[in-house]
Structures are given as C-alpha cells and as structure tokens.
Length: 91
Image 1: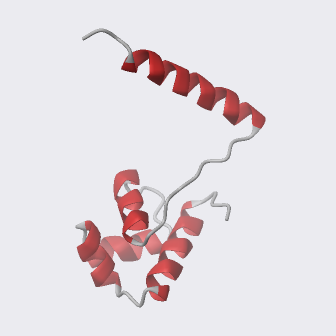
Image 2: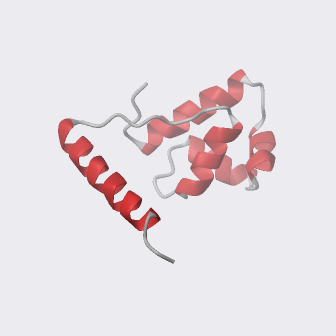
C-alpha cells in the first residue's frame, strides 16, 4: 500500500480501527490522546504529530517499511552512513 498524503494515513487508521471493532475512544486510550485527536487524524489532519501517528499505527498492529526511489535511496544511504559514524563516536 502506498501512502502519500495525510488523508491516506487517516483512511488507513480508520479502516484498521474499524476492522478491530475499536471505537475512536478505545484507540485514543491505547495511545494516550483524546478521541477528538483520533477523529482529526482519521480526517487527514496534516499537522498530526508524527510520534503519535506512529503510536496509533503500532497500536493497530502496523509497522512501516520504507521504499525509496533511486534519489531517495542515495539520501537514505547518506543518513544511514552518518548515523553509523555518530554511533561509533568516542564518548
């Protein structure tokens, strides 16, 4: 499944929540937010906090795999390389 917009994230979360037969309140409780926040996320709120969005997906049993274009792969490799260097830095 390709997700490119906040609306698509919201639709995915809505669908997954319904499949589990969870209310918005149940999902909100699971991730520590209000029911209104979940409703806004499902409606495609473009400024939803990424950490909370990932927590919602995790609560619904979703993990994310990233597929990159050739340009994206070069950037991802550079980030991975920089992260590896930071991890080896002396303390």
